[in-house]
Structure formats: structure tokens, C-alpha cells
Image (cartoon, rainbow, N blue to C red; front, side, top):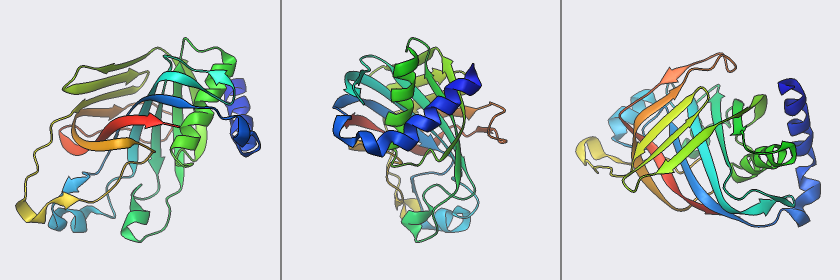
Length: 219
């Protein structure tokens, strides 16, 4: 069944450009964290740029709206992505990474909504999700507690503190932008950032890093 969902999802993504006139409108919340700090000193970034930042978790919760004519009110999707190089390499003048992803779609979604959620994530991430190796329906928690955002979905766990200390040591600055379309993006601290699934050939736990972005999205 999972394999069938994956095949149908890929078919939907391939057909997405043909449905451009019917994509509709969406609003919701977004959060991400990667295995590289987005706000840090140049001395640290210069020494780590080639070796870190290859993995990330991206999560969306739709408040209301539709995609490809499918209503998605209240549904969520989480993507665990892994690349062959830093996911922000293009921002540093390098080549685009090759990316594989494991998608976790809201267990409350029906088959059509699952396909629409995958297509939405692909569109809002500008195709970053790359080659989708697994699509798994699962219960998703996406909770904004005011000062922090907590996400859990299957093999993924993410806890982002919205307060980030702008430490000026070592010439600290913002090095990257969000991996997906975000309105009013802000940086945060990933108190917890973990993926332990078997599908990507890599696992990670990268807590207590200034590696997160959060905000709202509209489309």
C-alpha cells in the first residue's frame, strides 16, 4: 500500500505543472531545521560549510485552503530530506545538491489529500524534496505554543525555540534563507532536531543549534 501511495505521489508531482491553473490558495504555518547553523560566525561556517547542513526537516500545517482543487484545512505534512552536500550550497555559490526525502503525510488525510499534500510540499520547497523514496501516512503533531513550535511525525521530532540570541562573536551573521517559501521568516533555535528512519540511509540528531526558521506561508 505504501509503495502504491509513493508511485501515485510521484505521478502527481510530475503532473503538477499541468495543473498550475488549478492550484488554488493556501495559508498556514511552517517550520524547518537543518544540520547547519543558519546564524553563526564566519570562522565556523568557513570550516564547516562542506561537511554540515546535508540534512533537514521541513514541516507545514495548513490552516485553510486547497491545492490542486483538494481541500486541506487543518492537515499537515513533514519532510525529512538528505542531500549529498550542504542544502544551502547554492547560496554560497556552489552546485545544487542531489536530495532524497521521506515524506510523512497526515494520517487523517484521504488518498487525494495525501497526494495534494506531497505536491504542495514539492511546490512550496521549490522542488527541494528531490527524489521521494518513501511516503508514509502517520499521526502528526504540529503545535505552536507561542514561544516554541513542536512537531512530531513518525521518525521525526522537532522542537524549535522562537527566541534566538544574536551573539556577535566571530562576526556572527545570517548565512542562509529558508528552504521553502515563508512569509515573515524568523530564525530560531532547534532544541530538538531528529530523524531516525531507515529510508534515507542516514540518521541525525542535531539539538541546541541556531539552525531553524519559522513563519507563515501563503500560496
